[in-house]
Each structure stands twice: as C-alpha cells, then as structure tokens.
Image 1 (cartoon, rainbow, N blue to C red):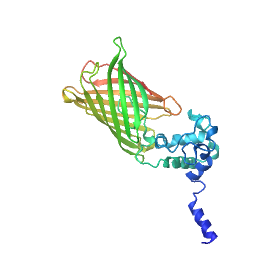
Image 2 (cartoon, one colour):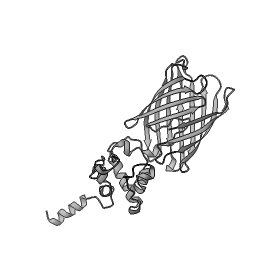
Image 3 (cartoon, rainbow, N blue to C red):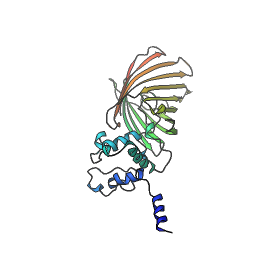
Image 4 (cartoon, rainbow, N blue to C red):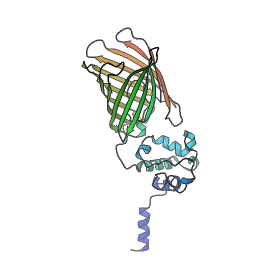
Length: 316
C-alpha cells in the first residue's frame, strides 16, 4: 500500500471537522470526558461535577432546543453551574445541533421517549410522558401529595396521599398507580400511554376502586399548540365498571405560560351524565422548567345538582 493510499484511507475514516463527534471532542471532552461520562481532563477543577451526558435518562429527558440553549448561552442561563461556558459567539446553530445530536446518539438504546414530547402537565387529564416529579395539588377542599418515579425507559410508578383542608382535616385516602408509555413518535410529535390506578379502602375510602386508563399527548408540527387527553373506565368493588370518563384539553405555549382549556365528560352506567370545563394556566417558574405551577377552575355545565365551581391548582 502506498503512502498516498494510506493517507486517503485515514482521511476517509476521520470525521469531518464540523461533525458532532469532532466538535464534541474539541469543545466538551475536557470536562465531560471522551466518552461523555463526566470524567475529563479538567473535571477535577470544576466546582460542580460534570454531567454524565451519555446516560439515556439524561440525554433523552430534555428537548433538543433546551440543550442547544445551554451550550449556546452557558449553564448559568438556565440556572445550572457557571462552570458550563457559553459557546454562542463562536458556534453556528448547525454546529450546536450537531454536538447535541452526537451526545444523544451515545445513549445507544431505543425506546426512550424524547423530551420534545414532555408536554406541560394539565389539571385534569393524566400526562402521558413518564416523569420524575413531586406534585402538591389542590382540588377544592382536598389536597394531594403526588410522588412520581420513572423506572427505565417507559415505566412510571406513582403514589398519592390525600388530605382534607377543612375543620375535619386529616388523612382522606391514598392511591397507587403504574403507567407505561406504549407508543411514541418524535416525527409525529405524539405519544400514548396506558396506566392503572388502585385506591384501597382506607379512611374515607370505603371500597376498592380501580381505574385503567389510556393517556395521549401531541404537539402538532412541533409548534406552540399542545393537545392532551385521557380515557378512563372506573371500576368499583360492588358495582363493577361504573361507566367511562373522557378528558380532553388543548393549550398554546406563549413563552413561559401555557393557557389551556380542558373538558371533562363522565358517562355513568346508570344515572345522569356530567360535563365540566376547566380553564387553566400553566406557568414555568424556573428557567430550566423543572419547577412549574398551574391554576384553574372547574366550571360544571351539566350533571347532578347542586354542583358549584371549585378552584384547582398545583405546584411541581
């Protein structure tokens, strides 16, 4: 083999200078390591340990636009470590996207729902995206403490404890739940999950209740509009399947605020149907988006009288 042939072969094997792999090695590897595991030549000098970017749970959790903003504007721009510098003045959007897509490719596993499908949490419908969250929620005079824990790629377990916020006070009831992301598509900007909620007979809860459900979320075209829905088939210990509940909402993201309107329709096996509207506003409280709140009101339009409006809110 001639030297020219050898050089040509090496050139063909080397990634182009603007490839995500090359740019990562030049700009990021000294802190995050050649393998992106967070151990690089300069990591010992950092005040905050560098993030393990190769982990699937980390690289898939946030949308590409947020990752690009962090690399462009630096960690401090979203409340992260100041050790993370800003590359905005020395990099093009295409270069930043190439780096992020290379980092996301290091996961090497399929089946992780992408962060682009992590839509703002509605007040009524169950969110389809598997999450790690702690939520404090108020529904009229009932307060709920919700703990959600993601396990692996698609599974989430959940626990709910309810308290009464009135003169009686005290523990009201509890629910355990499991959710599984059955399908997602970044190209279609949509996902669907199935779940099961179980409420045992504790305190104010007299009978076992089981609620299987299907939850759906979509962000058509990756724009500002978000659509979320849920179909529930409640089951009670002595009654069996008591009917069906349909919850459907639409919202539009305006910077860090998402006004939404949800509708809830209950169709019992026997008795009068119920229908209510839930106007609400979701607000991003932290720059990274991991702290948020929502406030809204339930407006009954049809059902067994008397039904009055009630305040709904949560902080997560």
